[in-house]
Structure formats: C-alpha cells, structure tokens
Image 1 (cartoon, rainbow, N blue to C red):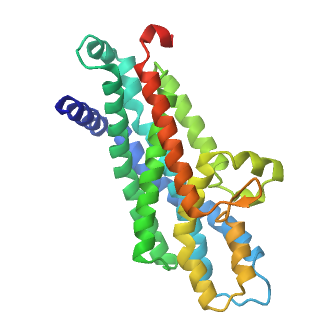
Image 2 (image 1 turned 60 degrees about the horizontal axis):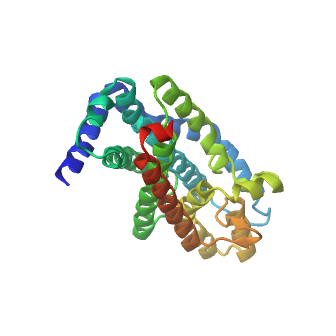
Image 3 (image 1 turned 180 degrees about the vertical axis):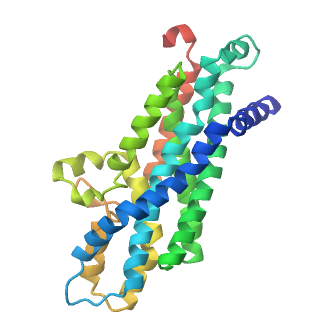
Length: 299
C-alpha cells in the first residue's frame, strides 16, 4: 500500500512540476466559461425564449438564471472529461522519456503502476474541476441564483462521478500512446468533439431523430443531463412557484435535455447515476485487464 501511495504522490507532483501542463489545466475552465458566456449565452437564451409561450410573463433574472445554469452545466460536463486527458499526460511522458524502463525492471507490478496513474489523474482532475465549479457558481450568483445547498452537494457528487468517467476513459485511450505528439492529437480531438457528442454545446433535442437515437447510447449524454438536472432544478421549481403551466415547464425541461429518452422511455436521474456508475465500473474493469496483459501480447 505504501508503494501504491508513493506512486500516486509521485505522479501528482510531476503534474504540479510541469508548469505548462498545470497552467493549461487550470486556465481551461476560465477560458471555457468566458467563451461560453460570450458566444453561447445568446444562443441558449434565444433557444430558451423560443420555448416560452407569448402569454407567459417571465422575469429577466429567471431567464438569466436559466441560461447561466445551462452554460455552467455544459462547461462542467466538458471540463470533467477533457481535463483528465490533459492531466493524464504523465502516463505518456513516462513512456516517451524512457522512465517506464525503470519501472519495468522494478518489482512493482504493472497494474499497480497504471492504477497509480489513474488515481493521480482523478485527484488532480478533481482539483481543477472543483475550481471550475466554484467559477460556475460565482457566475450563476451574478446572473441569477436558484440553487439550494442540496443542489450544490449533488453537483459535487456529479462532478466526482464525471471525473471518474473521464479518468478511466482517458486512461484507456492514453494507454497505447507512446509520444507526446500522439497525446496532443488525441487531446485536441477530444476537446473539440466531446462537447458535441455529449450534448453540452447544443441540446440533443435540437438534433435529428436519428442522431438523437445514436447519442442515447453514449454514457456522456446522461452525465451531461445529470448535471443539468441538478443545476436547473431550482429554476424549474421557481417557474412552478410563479405559476407556469406544468406543460410549459416540462417543455422547457425537455428542450434542455433534462429528460433524455432511451428507446422511447424517459431516463430518470437515478438511472442516469446507475448508467454512469456502471460505465465507470465496466471501463475500469477493461482498464485493469488491459494493463495486466504482458507487453508482448499487447503489441
């Protein structure tokens, strides 16, 4: 156990020692929230208002609170996954710089080495994404706060779950990589594409039926929806308090992907949690199997 903890600490310290990697990871949430607030806020606001009947009177604060919650949920859904790919660069660096040769001749078992990378990635990614959550809550506080203490607690749990998902996904993807160039290419692809396939940049309800069906099989879809549910729960409750018709509130909720469907059935938040946990366990088991294989078998 002491060796395992030492490996985790070693990988964490390497992350902090690499100023470029640390800065890029820490600044990513800041850049995202600025870009989202600058370019996506108007798109989200127009989309939201298009689902409000003309006869319904809604305050500017409630509109801004809804848009801010949607933006924050999108940012966290993307950041929790993409940041892990940046943090997990230590695994590839060790192979590229030849450090793994020293580990290979040591008595440390190979699965333990890779578990050290995994848990270091989880801890470092949590640090970055807790910062992202704090920035998002500050932004929501300025625009329109409707969250409760329980909502914030649930958001933290969602964040942990999504970081675990991102960490195990990035660990599997990064495992065969041998150069930092390959890692940079993978990181760029994931950063550019993940937000679309998980429904963060644009609600899945805006896509065609065929694409919606395909995305309903992706676990990231339910991770994003889970954060949206907890981020916007207070907003929907406020709408009901203001006397919004139930069908209007449901229509808004549907348009923001808070009620995703699978095979025509609405997936409730508790099942979204089970889907994400099951995915983490499944991918985690696959990661353990892959890392346990001899190097020659892998090649």
